[in-house]
Length: 187
Ligand SMILES: Nc1ncnc2c1ncn2[C@@H]1O[C@H](COP(=O)(O)OP(=O)(O)O)[C@@H](O)[C@H]1O
Ligand SMILES: [Mg+2]
Image (cartoon, rainbow, N blue to C red; front, side, top):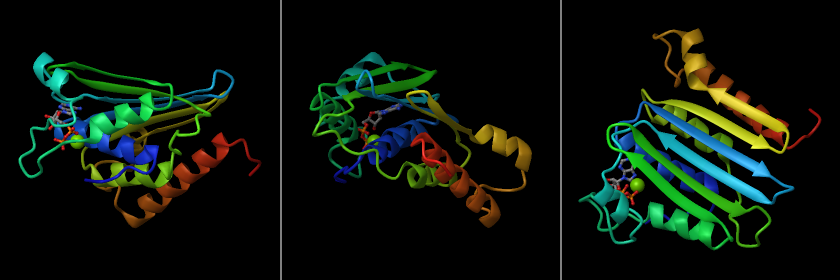
């Protein structure tokens, strides 16, 4: 079982659940409000969703539908991380429509994991989750960075994959620039 060192790894794990559930769109929102001292992460997928029974079990550390591994710990770990940081955790799901996972943390909490390499993690998702679009919205107080792979797909057309070296370089650069702009640094 992977030990998640930072929040980007939690996000990747939660997003992967959505992809396994057949999602074609992942909507990832990160909101950092430093005056309210809150960091909020929302991962929304349009996959198969979960019924009430599965939704109830899914936050139990000993539950998984997977047969290749005994336990699925991703969701319980994410929940625990948020709750350790004076935060909150909630999953809502609608069968046939999708699932939304929301975790909030006290931004300045001493135990809050760092966000980690968000640009690298997003690049992994965009290239690795074939056929899945990613809408990424990240706000830090009044600064905002948005990336929507559907916009990029519309420009590229259907023939050029995100794994094309030039596209990969463009995506990597866009993500890194976006993350830098959120820090309010002068380029
Ligand atoms: N976003 C989701 N959409 C549909 N089902 C989900 C989602 N997230 C979790 N599940 C269900 O809950 C189970 C447990 O998830 P998880 O703890 O991540 O373990 P694992 O992914 O290893 O199976 C999954 O196998 C799946 O059946
Ligand atoms: Mg999982």
